[in-house]
Length: 187
Image 1 (spheres, helix red, strand yellow):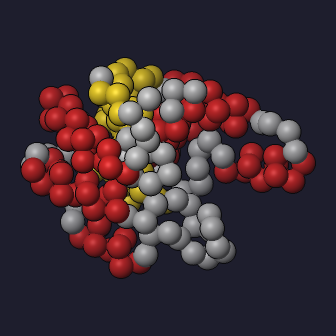
Image 2 (image 1 turned 60 degrees about the vertical axis):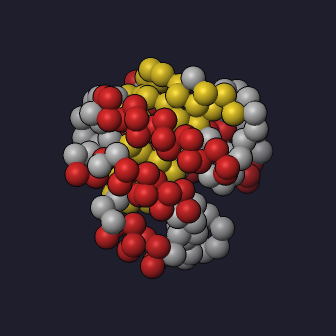
């Protein structure tokens, strides 16, 4: 396992290399998070070097609509089209480990079960929470349809600094998720 000294977008190239090497070894799909599309475009370039898209899926999970402003998404329509044209499968949905519960805690205070799961995963690192979450989101959306290991990548703020092999569970069965191997993470 590669341990990065800090969480940084600068870790993205190494995280992608480790992820696509493992995906090739396991003959499986790659699921990753992106906000503006920068990480997804870096993944498209990395996937080309591994000939990944001719054999397996690259599933890109974006922020939900309205995360920052009503009716807006961080990923532009042009960026979305370019990623799809390059062969990525895009999933934009409510975030498994926040969604409605964030509205409840914001309005009424307190902590709710999904937030406890999210904070527990953050004990490993922010990216680990993201990896588990996007695996469930891809499964919920039908971008993944089989119960089998995939390589997931997430990060801290911007960029990708965490990669792991996991078998996702649906959001409604999140505890069926299994993290098999951590490929990289920040200290």
